[in-house]
Length: 291
Image 1 (cartoon, rainbow, N blue to C red):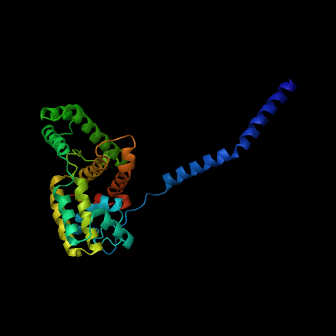
Image 2: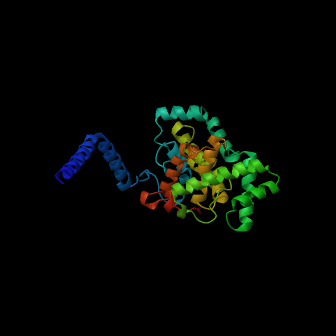
Image 3: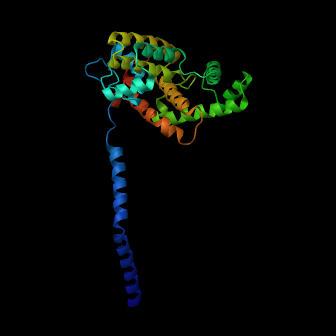
């Protein structure tokens, strides 16, 4: 009996000693757990606004249309028409990246974004079919309904299937990141114009920072962009969805992989989530869509 007990005790001691010997494993596990707890418990960062510029009223409402672009390419507080965060280094990059060497170049870029709007004819056609179908049904068309309608309108069946799958996947991932329940009814992508229009608003403020225009002129341009956007979209969520999906589709050329959204859309979706969260001082959470 004693021998059995001794053997059991010895086995237990060995297990304890082995566990103690794996201290480095427990250290790594402890650090990982600590990081997870910190991420979960720390409050989400607040959206930064300039105290020198309005956060309510028409001017704030209109410049908020450029929120996702000014966060994607940080150049100052969301409500700052002077883009005061543009350093000399950032200015040089924007000039090179966008071709903003002259005022004429700057105006041409805004004109392109507000007219051509990065549109691709087949994509525009497929989304128009969805918009018309959704209007008739009074709800978001189902996958097969949309695909069938594209083919009936003369579209290629294989292209339709690929495009529909891409748009619906990006919508799903964006809604998941932002919060599905926050989206009002009929918030589905019927145009990718949100991306170009959001960029145009940001570009107007960069023109002030670079020296191509005054704040007053930038405000006038932003107002004009908003007159279009407020007609084309029905809510901040619909606009943000169009911007996010449009950005991913543009830079991926519509060719998606399982890493595409994480690389091109996750950051924008996170900014989108902040924009519609009142506790984080998101401007889209408090500013009405209707001007």
